[in-house]
Length: 518
Image (cartoon, rainbow, N blue to C red):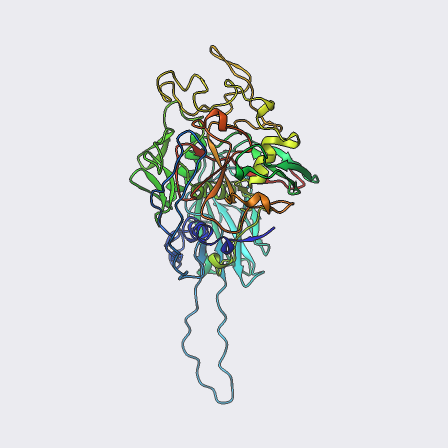
C-alpha cells in the first residue's frame, strides 16, 4: 500500500519537511571540487513543538495536545535533497527574418539522495541513488583516493542510466572522494558535478524475521478483557514479509547514527535538546516533555551515552527522531528508504511505502503479531513474572530498594531477561514467539500508526496501517513505570509525535524481500 503523506496532514507533512527539507541535503553550498555549483537549501518552516501535557504516573503513555500550526508552502521545488540545477544563460539570439530563434537546451538537473560531505557508510559496497531530469540521462560516478581526481588517483568509475549504482568495496578507516555528475561522451558536464568525502565504518543492528517472504498469516488482534481501546478482538491478515529488531534501539546505537549526522552539520543542539535546523525536537538530552533523560548527555556537540547506560534502550526520542534514525540508517546501508517523493515537489508528493526495504517503524499490527504470535499471548511465555519483565517495582537489580534509579535504572539493558543468572538474580526469558526481547515492559515503543481508540471497530482486515489522520501516534508494550495490573501485550498507548518521554523508545522494522531472510 502506498499512503500519501498529505492524507495524514500536519505531522506527516512535518516529517516530510524535516527529512526532505533539510536533513537530506546532499552537499554544501560550495561542494568540494565544484566551485561553479551550489545546492539550494530553501525549505518550508515546520511547526515548532511545545511541551505537551501528559499523564504517565505508572500507566500507559497518553497525550492531549494537538498540533496547531500548518507549515508554510514550499518555496523551492528541490527541497530536501542535494541538487544541481543550472540554467544556461545565453545571449539573446540574433533576429533572423523568417527563421525561429535557436532553442537553448536546458542543463539536466541532478538530485543525489541523502549524501553529504563526510558521509559514513555502514557497509563496504553500498548502493547510492539519484534522480535526474530528464529521466534516463546518463550519470557518471567516480571514486578516487585524492580530492583532485587525477587519473592516477581514480580507483573506479561507472556511467549509469539506472538512477543507482553500487560502489566497489571501500576499505575501513580510509577517506575516499566521490564525484557524481551528468555524463556527456564519458566526461562530466561541469555544471552538474557534486563531490563528497565518504568513508566506511561497519555498523548494524540485529533483526529477526517475523513473517518470511512468500508467507501470509491471520491472527487475532485486540483483547476483549482489556480497556475499550483494546476492543474488540478482530482477525487481521499480514501479507507483507518483515523483520523486527531483536532488541530496542540502545543509547549506544542511537548515538552512533545521530553523531554521524551531527558531524555532517544537519542537526543542532537547542539547550540540551537535539533538534533539526528548523527546531523540530528529535531527542531530549535532559529535561523532556515529561520527566528526565536517563541514558545520554551531550559533550562537545555530540551525543554521549552515560557510563553504564550504553546497552540500555534509548528514551527521550520523538517520533520524528525515530524516523530520522531509520532514514539515515537505510542510506548508510545503501537501502531504499520507505519514504518516497518526486524531487520536483517533495512535500506535495511524499509518500510512505512500507514495501521499500529500508528501515522504518513497525505498524501497530506488525508489532502486535511479533509480540503475541498466533496463540494471542497476553504475556511472554503466557505468564507475567517479576523476574522476566521490567515494570513498576518489579524488583530487578537496576531498580533499587529506595528509588527507581539507585541501582542504575529504571531501564534495564536490552535483552537482560534472557533466562540467565545475573549475579544473584535469576532472570526468566521474555523472548517473544519469534525471539525478540523486551516487547513487554522496559520502554514503550513508537509505531508508525496514528492513534484512534475506536480504530479496531473499523480496522481493515489486511495489512492495516492505522487511521488516515490523528494528533497522537501509537506506542506499544508498556514500560518500567507501568503498573503490573495494567501490563499486557495488547495494551495501547499514545503520545504526540513531537513529544519526548523518559519511558518511550523505539524498535526497528524492515520489509523483507525474496532474497533475504534476516
